[in-house]
Amino acid sequence: MSSDAITHTIVVAAYASAADAEADYSATESMYDEAGATDAFDGVLIARNDLGAARVVKDRAPNRSEALRGHDVGLAGGVVVNLFPRTALVGTVRSAGALAIGDCVRDALSGEDLTDLGDVLMTGHGDIAIVTTTELRRTVDKALSRAAEIVHKSIGLDEAQLRSAVQRAQYEREM
Image (cartoon, rainbow, N blue to C red):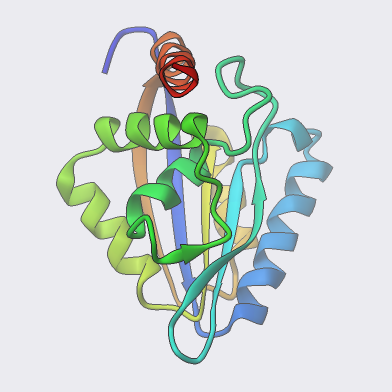
């Protein structure tokens, strides 16, 4: 992690039902709104059908990050892109920028961290992935009151490296 890296906390939660996951996702959005941090909310809501097929129900990217501004996913989307096989998740954005964000997230986490996060996402009928500031982590945890399981991982990302990776991926795709 470079000295210019900003530390975030990845919060992944699994739910017994998609309805519980959706309720906690909405509660978390409301908590950010009440805290005056609407532009900082970075979350993905995933639901599974009875056969286990997963789909993205909601994906809200933040406006706080200069590197991510104007892109179709945030860091939470990058987490999800890495934890599901690229063909297994219906509704995810597969733009060059989204995949570059996912690659930056993957590179910033250890293999053990990715496994821990993935294990939680594979257990529920509904799941949430949120990337939050360290300061808001406890508040986010309170909003995720219906979760059957929650795991946290710290991630440090350098804004300049993230911006460069996204720009490079978009340039390469245009070539």
